[in-house]
Length: 297
Image (cartoon, rainbow, N blue to C red; front, side):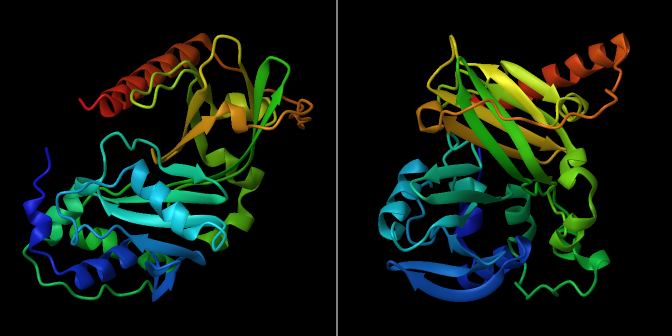
């Protein structure tokens, strides 16, 4: 259990400045549809969940849907929502929520950050002067911080299968200026994809998994059977640093079409029996951790 009292004594304006620095946002207060935004991240609007106005409430899907109602027709594309993990509904397992034409990204402030800054006078963090300084805001407070990867994925229903193509991948914390120099559109930083083909909205259970070398051998694509599957799939994209992007997909919203044509490498990567066995152990451990988190354990 988290101690929400740690947040009660914090000055919200200073906390806001800290969060914007933490997630590398540019401070710029403005309103859209009577919703207050605190800044922009990669050019897209950033909203802070106002826990100071409702200390007893947690942010869940209902809150995101209410934002959508106020913003629809005025905003399309990405909207970032920053929330302390202490005020985030434990059932809000995913990081990305597509609602209408808006793609909500949930950025959680770690509890270790709240503990670290509690009782300290706030100060503006220095902006990074060079690439070597990018992690200074995090290192200053000494807490673990997961930075969401970014993935461009195409989903297509064809026959009895769902086809998934990873067009590009940006590992968590990647400097956007470095993306152009990466091989394979950043996809070599994609460590693993885990899937739950019967996601019930509460507990994530691995039904399928694919490692990076398997994806590369198959032209950065994979297929999943729809027969016997549920109405919602849940995908976890993990980079080589352990950062995860969690995304639910409602199958009825996926467009039907021809099976995507992908370019496969000429030489496939050979995997030994020992590598396969070790990989299965890794998946088992990761799946247990995810199931424990989603089950509230």
